[in-house]
Image (cartoon, rainbow, N blue to C red; front, side, top):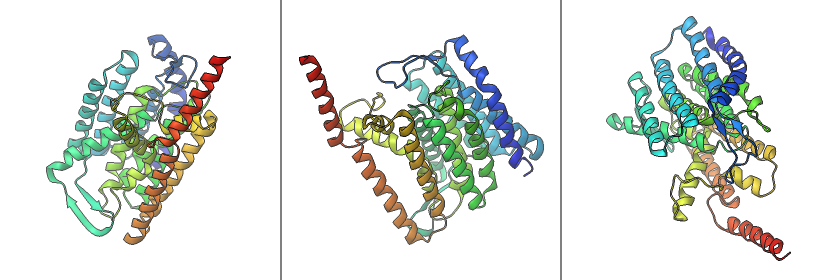
Length: 360
């Protein structure tokens, strides 16, 4: 692959050039994220930063096409990615209902399937050599996976540099894992995306000068989900179905806990709140920058765990999965992401402070 190094380099250069253009365009068309009580930022921010990531991604694949030819799966990834990006732009500039956005995501996920981006079988994490061929059911499973990851990345885009940084770590981990298991088709999409995000991150890290917007966050989640399917999810080894989920553990688990939390509290599942992991980290006193770096560290540990899984025996992999899952549950409950003790403690402290202020 002569484009293995050139394509990511071009993606970096195009993204760097495109960020200022995206900022100016966002201001011209009114794609500005205004502050509100649920959000952390305190000043209006342009939110078409995803345009620079999209252009970097496309430029990287153009290099691949020129030097190595564009594989069928890569064409599907670009087609679906362009559609999800367009849906995000509409949401950033006009505003779309959650239902309409979901329908668009399902359509984009469906587009990639004829190009060979699908999950044909699943493996058993504790049973070596077990393969369950999905047949027709591979289509809805693939669509569910892509839509879930797309929304998960979008939901964690709540602090400067959070979604971009976590996704950058995830992309480079996916590329490494695909290389480890010998799937070269899975290396390039993740590598190009990681390079584009690496170039975008200095503009997006605290204090941010531009936001990804839905066009960027949904695009990133979509490419990560499809890249995992192109790469490691089609490799017939024991834990390959779970490794992409572990790599993307922060957005996926945070979304799962949000659904669980809202259901237990009798709230609408799609109603936004301030109880995601990054909000909880801020509430315990971490600075904006420190909270993001903590999540980066957790993402890096999960990524390393996913790579280690592929080198272990089935029994060892099962033990590591149990340890990782237990740690995530303990941390989530301790920070109040799924539990109630922590949240009640801090709410009562806030109410006590308000009461004291009122008495004065």
